[in-house]
Length: 149
Image (tube, rainbow, N blue to C red):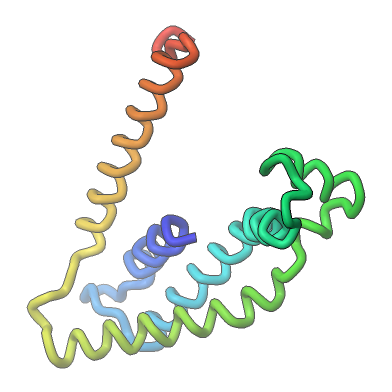
């Protein structure tokens, strides 16, 4: 959820800036709510599986077993349970939190503003490191050389 949310939030803030590079409180609120809505919607299937595993008391062998059971017995709706509630709670929560945070930051500590380009660079660095780690695991443990595929 957090990777999706913060990436989208930084992107939406960048896109919503006016010609002077400023963001109104309304635009901050909209960016926070939009990013939270999309992140919550994307994350809901994984959250539904996690909840089933936690409540299953050992009934499932793992993630795949749980997902297969949900699909077989309930269909796609099993993966979307709680979507409305998650979006209803998470969207305003994150919108209000980040609007207040950024507004207070502008007022009390204007020099501490983090440019969205720095966030993008950090995210790109994290993503490239994770990809390298995954490539190493695939090559060392499974003998799969991504460079040759």
